[in-house]
Length: 173
Image (cartoon, rainbow, N blue to C red; front, side, top):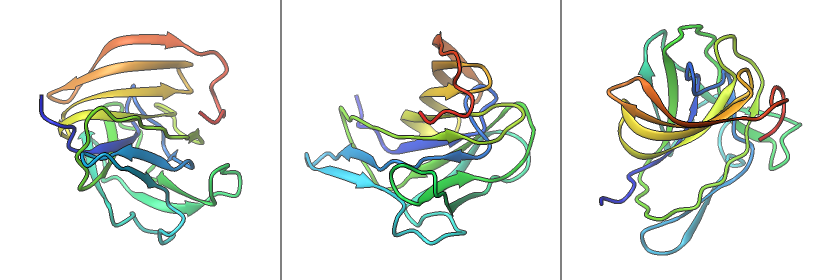
């Protein structure tokens, strides 16, 4: 089995995301060399996409826009990564891909807050990314009050398992 190429945050999935998505907590990943890496946004420049990330889009709609913003309510630092486009396309899953990481048997942690979105208010993590249309994702959706595991093959997500989590709207996960 090949190692995981990249870790990803998402926002906007018609079943998988939020517009915008915020990730206020640091992300830790054990690298192939056995060391732990922590990714936060405290040294990132407000108003632009962090340099170690690449934007991608599963589905359609207008271009996506990931940016760093300041959020005084963030429990883990004032700067957060947010997807700010307001596109209401139903099949639309913006991805923020962390570049240049290869890892195996990783533990990832992320905190996010659903702050807006008409189609979805969700966010999640991606594993086994092959490309923008082929990966697995775990995502929480405040509008649907659930958390789910999905397999994305050729674009559309296929539910593997979902669980209802009442009262998720506006909560920090």
